[in-house]
Amino acid sequence: MKIWHKGFNINKEIEEFTVGEDYLLDQKLLKYDIAGNIAHAYMLYKVGILKKMEYSKLKKALLSIKDLEIKKEQEDVHTAVEEFLVKKLGDVGKKIHTARSRNDQVLVDQRLYTKAELLEVIDYLLEFCNVLNDLAKKHEFVAMPGYTHMQKAMPSSMGLFLSSYVESLLDDLILLKAVYDINNKSPLGSAAGYGVSFKIDRALVAKVLGFKEVQNNVMYVQNSRPKTSLQVVQALEGIMLDLGKLANDLCLFNLLEFVKLPKEFTTGSSIMPQKKNPDVLELVRGNMAVMAGYVATLCGLYGKNPSGYNRENQLTKKPLMKSFDLVVDNLKIMTLLMKNLKINEQKCLEECTPDIFAADYANMLVKGGLNFRDAYKEVGTNLDKVYKMNPVVNIKNKKHLGATGNLGLGKLKVKISSQQKAWEKEKAGFEKALNNLKKL
Image (cartoon, rainbow, N blue to C red; front, side, top):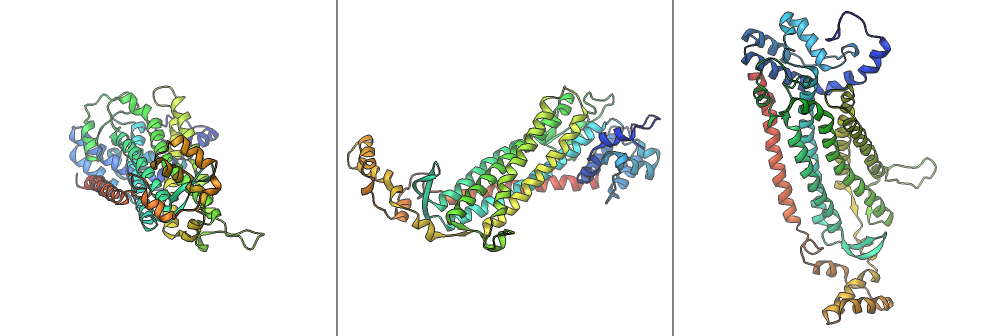
């Protein structure tokens, strides 16, 4: 029976439509709903609403839940857990929802879930940065042409190309840190967005659940549900944009034979026996559009809702969860791929044709005393006289900060390691808080 049941049965078609997929999606929230319930019951005991024995029974019953089927008629994990408690404890179980709404309950579950998922994404992101940086170091001085407007432009290197993505992904980490902090606030106690008439202790709940602080304004707590989901998914989109762009570059490099995927990483054609297709890269590239769809969905759900809780907020859960799954899957597959990618050094070198050294010849004339505009014209009208320089010597000689001869890969390695240690500490603190609920 629904916890909001009022003595009449809801139309079955309406029920089917309004329940949606929550009863399926909420399996991912079960452990966090249990944690939120323990923290809430502990607070009710501390402020005198529950007796010690009642709290002890509730905690013991909650900790006994290892798996729980969420039925469609229950709508969500919150009802399933409450019905379990009532069945097991009777009237004591009915007290768990005192001073709380499903609105702040789902939010605390989602915040804890999001926190855990962000920590996992950051783990995979930093691992991928390490793989890219190590590959850049291994091929630091593999000379290759750089491109502008899809045409050969100037001398480049495989090290420059790969490490550019390391730095871009570390910028993504800055955004992940920002949304992690935004999400790291306890919503419990906001109820349906207007508070409750009990003297509750919101700060205590935040502390025992490992949140950094309480989210203050109770109406904003409810308004922030789609907004925070949107901000998180926008940060995740930044990662997918980088992965998709890298995948696209590698598709082009595969075409130019600068790189080669191991045959076991390719798929085939149903008609052409010779084909070894880079489908994995094309799918990563395509997943940028899938992520953009999740962002668009959440934008619409936030901006077009009036203040206060509205049922559309239910629709934010799926795109948020799907976004985490998508980013993790793509980070894992791209990490595996980059660990096994083959660099065709000889082909990269062969394609360093004389024309890509034109700008360097103009610069040589400038060093000899000619102004740049005249040097540019001199080389531009005599391109047939430009001959091939030694590409490796060329890229090594460009030693200013960030250039091919001074990529700072060692500094990037230190930065990645420092971030890994900091986030491992944060993850350990979060896990400790959840484990300590058993001891309250």
